Length: 128
Image 1 (cartoon, rainbow, N blue to C red):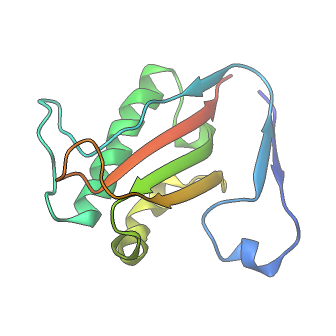
Image 2: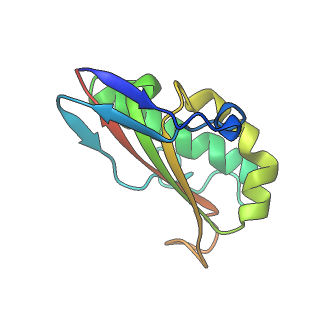
């Protein structure tokens, strides 16, 4: 798999966790939206954005490993949140998963599949 980061040269790009774009070749994994549910399907961190971010990304890690990948293979995240201000305050919890500046989109939505869910993450990963 080849991976080429795209940069426009804007100073802002050095300050954020994501890149402007990524060009890849090879097999691709598209995940479903992953939320903060534990192995039994219970919501982790009701009312706690930081806990939900960590659990959603941990669940994504399980999917990546099952496909033979890891966070470094992610080339694009789409993150849906019910409170963008809370996410921006707690976004540091996503930092360990933003490896090599993947593309990223953050979208505030009115609600997710369960009213206690605050964050849902989906990813596109380039596999070897």
